[in-house]
Length: 182
Image 1 (cartoon, rainbow, N blue to C red):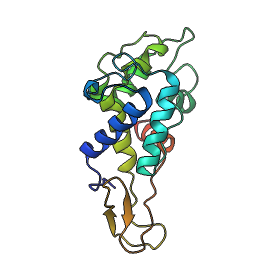
Image 2 (cartoon, one colour):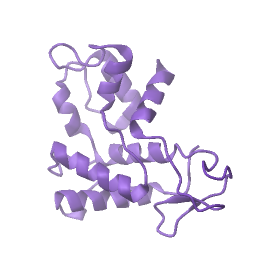
Image 3 (cartoon, rainbow, N blue to C red):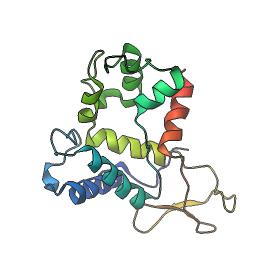
Image 4 (tube, rainbow, N blue to C red):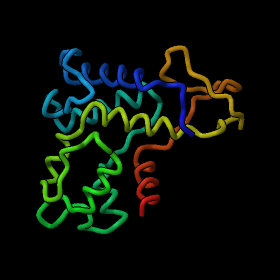
């Protein structure tokens, strides 16, 4: 269910906080279009730290595997990445459907190692919103549909029993999305 309790602005604020704490960069340098690697200096381990901070902030689980791994798993080896480590037409088609205009520099034949540098603050925030939008219709604890935002504006709780909302994890969401377009 598309949720309206946590705004995109709040997600962006929490993401900026996680980036500043992880990368020790100036908050003013963080723009929606900023590449985490190219513009902000993130390295691969920094993504784990940023994701962990976001998971703690919002009470959800991000994807552990990149969408390319899920494409290969679901459609077969070589579907997304060829024997030379380059992205296939199918990978580009699926990535563009998934990320839309957030990754305009994708092109067939590009080296798969170039993809992480295309991840922007905006595309990362979109991934968080996708997870939060997996809010179930009803609370798994009491069965009521009484969701409400917590006082801090970054958690969703059941207004009936106080249970924190549970969300579909990022890997399961990616698999669900790939199943729909198959």
